[in-house]
Image (tube, rainbow, N blue to C red; front, side):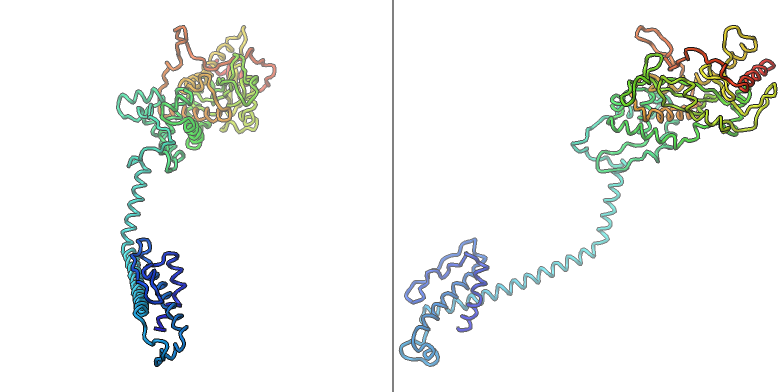
Length: 527
């Protein structure tokens, strides 16, 4: 019994800490001094799990009271060892019940601890089995990962349709783009009407530009495909519609449309770098042969300027962009060969600049002075005049060793009149080239709102498309150069021609320039 008392005295504080204030009341009201009734009470449901621990507290208290009462009796030890009169050496029935309850609490506690140990061992074994099972199932996990990766790839490539876009994405319709994607005989004419080229040429351009226009697949809106990006840029240039209207036709946002045009503008010069260049090899021989047939031996092409009408500029002084036709414009200088191919482009200066100023600011003047503009063996003309090459222009340019202009004047000699007539025919190629350029890409035909920083690149991209269509043999529809005005009268469109107020005088020309002009007139006389 002393051992039982010692054990319960040691576990008293620990048991109280575990159970807190929920103490089992099984022996509540027990009269340790004897004579009291033993009240059995049913523990509440909230403390049922702590019943055994609470019993230890109650039994420890009862045994402690018995020990204090016994120790207060004289001869306690003697009575316990052999019995002495005055104190009973035998426990009373109440004390026996208390000792039995304490022993029972110890047994229950031991059983609980043994069950807890068994539970821990069982959980540990279960964890080990799960770990072993996971190791065995690793190949299945790899298979599932591959399946998920393939599904994501299919969704990104468009094989599997994506779910409905999230709420912050504006849903749009396909519009004109969906009509262009239809492949049948009726849609071919629709394709030419909207993009001014057949489907096969469009697909060649799209495939060439696709590596530079491919978008990264993200978790947001499905990216625009390269074909749609190229189609939108061509549609914007061909129709001249505003960004708000043209983007609605393609089911894209305004910002996406601006980025698409910018990307196509920067991609075309990289992919088709040879489309705007001076002729070499067989192509040069063909150009020289065509110029010979027109009476201009060793002529490389013609030069002229046109005005691109724009809205009033906001980030630059508007008065310098105000031309002689009282419209805001930017000057575009183009050199073309006798087959209408573009050889050089220079765009960006305000509409108030004269053609002479434009050609002096361009690279043509510098390269002509350095002798790098025309390459090839010199040609000897009548009178012993030698020339490496030249281009023809109108009276807006002064005569020079590399720019041949007409004589002009009223009372002309017969040779001068013949020369001016043929010179006008030869220079007409640049006018036809501008007509084809502005007629097909009508954004540069009408007044439009533009960014002056990107206008030069956009016009260069259009000139590249012009050469691509020429190489593909695409015929130009002359009806594009005619329109019906407000009064219902059919008239020719304004190509931006602004003739100088008066021809440039020959007083500033050099002797070599006049000698070249006379030699060509003499050759035409005998041809």
